[in-house]
Structure formats: C-alpha cells, structure tokens
Image 1 (cartoon, chains in turn purple, red):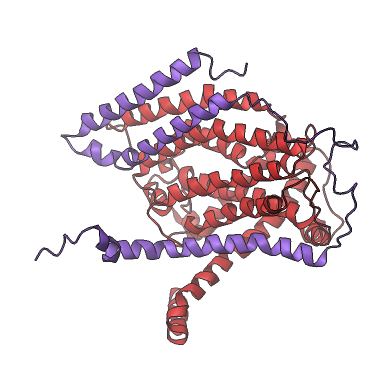
Image 2 (spheres, chains in turn purple, orange):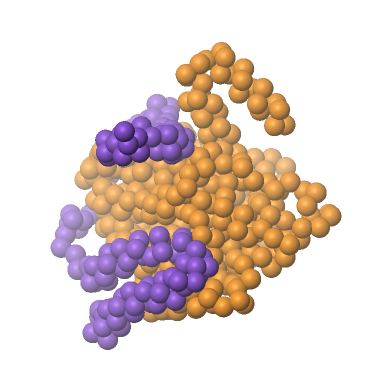
Length: 143
Length: 350
C-alpha cells in the first residue's frame, strides 16, 4: 500500500543506503590493508633480525643507570581539568558540523536567513560563556 | 586512459565475477600505498638534505648518486636490527602500538582525492572520516608510551595526550569554517567549491586565512613535528614514547609520522589551496594535469614542515596548551562568527 514507509528494519535494503555502504567498502578494505601493512614489517623483523636478549639490553633505558623504580608510579597529571573541558568542546564542534554544511542554504533562504545565524550564535555564545568562566577561574592555567 | 581503465574493469568482471570488486579495490589501494611509501622514503632524504643545506652542510651524499639510495639503505638496516621488547613492558600492547600508529595514517588516504574523480572512496562524510582517523593516531603513541614501562616513554605519552587536547578543538573549528564555505564534507566537493574563474583567488586560504594558519600549525602539532615534537623531545626525554623501540617496530612509528605529514599536506592543499586546481585557469597552467598541481602544493606544504624544523626551537608543552587554548580557540571562534556574518552580505565571493 504505502511502499515508502516500511519501517526501520528495511532501511539498509533501500538502494540509496546500499550504495552508501558500498561507497564505504574500499574504506573498510583500506583499514584492513593498513593493519596488515603494520603487522608485516614486525613479522619480517622478528623473522630475519637477530634475537639475542640479555638482562641489560631488556631493561628500560634510564641513561645507563639501573631503573630506580617502576615507571607506573603515581604521577600528577597537571592538565586533567583541561582534558575534561576538551571533551565538552569537542562535542560542541560535532554539533557545529551539520549546521556549517547547510549554512549556505540557510543564508540563501529568505525566511531562515537570520534565524539560522542567530540561533547558532546563541549556541556559540553559551559555549563562550563557559569558556570565559573556565579561563577566569584559572582552569586553563598551568599552576 | 579512461577507455583502458574501462576495458580492464570489463575484462576483470567477466573473469572474476563477484570477487572482482575486492580485487580491484586492492589494486587501487596498492596504487595509493606504493607511491606513498616511496614518497615517505624520499621525504626523509629531502628532510636531511633541506635541513642540511639550511645549516650549511650538504646532508647524506655517500649512498648512491647525491645520496639517492640513502632511504633504501636505512630501511634495510632497520630490517636487520633486533626488535627489543623490554622485560617490564606489556608485550602485547608494546607490539600492537606501532601498528595502531601506522594504520590510521594509511587508512585516511582512502577518501583523499588526488585529481578530479581520482579518489578511492568518494564518501559524503569524507572530512569526518579524516578527522576520526587522524585523531586515532595518538592512541598508538599513548599506548606505546604506557606499554614500554619506561619513564621517558611515559613522559612522552603524557605530553602527547596534553598535545592532542590543546590543538584538536582549534583544528575542529578551522574545519567548521571550511565546511561553511564549501557546504560539503566530501573532499572532492570542497575542491569543486574553490573552482571558478578567479583561479588562485577563489581558494579558501584567502577568506579563511587565519583558519589556514591555525590548521597548518595544528597539523604540525598533530604529526608531532618540530617545533611541537615534545612527545619525542630527543634532547630532553631522549626519544619520548619510542625510546624502547628498535628495528622494524621503530620504523613503523617513523613511517606513521611521515605518512601523517604527507596526509596533512594533502589535506591542507585540498581544503585551503584548491587541491588539484591550477593557480590560474589560463593556457600554460591548465595544460598540466590536476595531479601535478596537487603534488606541487603538497610538496610546498611539506617543505614548510621541513623549514619549520630547521628554524624554530621546541615549544614546552604547557606553552602549546596555552597557545591552543588561549590563542587559537578564541581566534577560531571569532572567525566562525565573522565568516557567518560575512556570508550574510553580498561581499562573500566564494
């Protein structure tokens, strides 16, 4: 009856989705080739290079000294706050991408013209507000 | 040329049937990766030569005429070197890390167009894919630094993490500006958006000049190149994340770094320098094929990479964080707004 409305399960079977997936097939193959290309030299090196380990050679490099302690010690990561803010900002950029792609269409349509612009400016404004707050509270400073 | 390709496709289809598509894809991938590997090899030589001449030395000139066989000799030497796996390391992660570093550097090339229509996978979200792949590369570095169980390697990994949280956002905003101008995430369409009668003046580096600079600098940071090579920092933390690596495992990190450099050069050319388009669409310039212009622009950006290394002292990583968060992010945010407002007026000519 209604051929266009078959429900989500048929989404992949529709021709456009299928060609889209076909477009990504070379990408998938390339990723596999990339992995193979990474593994091959290591295998080759393992195969033809000499392997004569001794305890000195296998110890971690510490300028010729014995290693003082395990390297997995407690370590003060100074920038953890920035790392947290980074996640927020990175997500915001993901929201900007679709808007940026259709921005020219927004500009060319009379009705949406200013609305589409101001809407995103409000969004960026809120983002900037958080950014200014983080800066003012010293979250971006090293100490 | 086109007829020949079509004839090959028809013959292959009749010979192999269903298996033809993967086989043909593999052939195309080899046609990308093999020149890329040669490019990497000779980029290392070019680097040593260029920096040599900048420092009034002559660089390698013993192996082959003008040192032309030097990269080959280096490769063979590394192949015969022992791969040392330190006692305290996580063996599995230690071996996997270089593979993880190289894989995205190669796989990202799947969506890069070299000339009009000359692209392996013409996907509509090419830029997102590129962004994902180039960001994945840092995992190889962080895992390598962690798995080595060495203090220098650990410090290198930490610095690499600090680096990626400082420039990735600015890079993302720079890309948002490109998307606004090009209204497509397909890299081929981004180049088509710069096509026009104005030639060179139609390219996005003119309206988006600050973004061009930000992207270039963020690209240098992304590839761990001087002056942002603090993850490696050979003069302070000896070799940073790959201090414990040797032989082919080390070579993989090397390959990944140079493949990433060439990738960033290609992306900069595509997004800001008009990709395969000639600088002027008139007689002597448009005789040359698009591939030539693409490679010429990539070579130019790569030369900048080498020039930076010979010129600038290394940044400290808190300095890079300050640069990313307090200079680039405000600059890019402002420019997103400026471009948005600019496109409302009739002075937007791109």
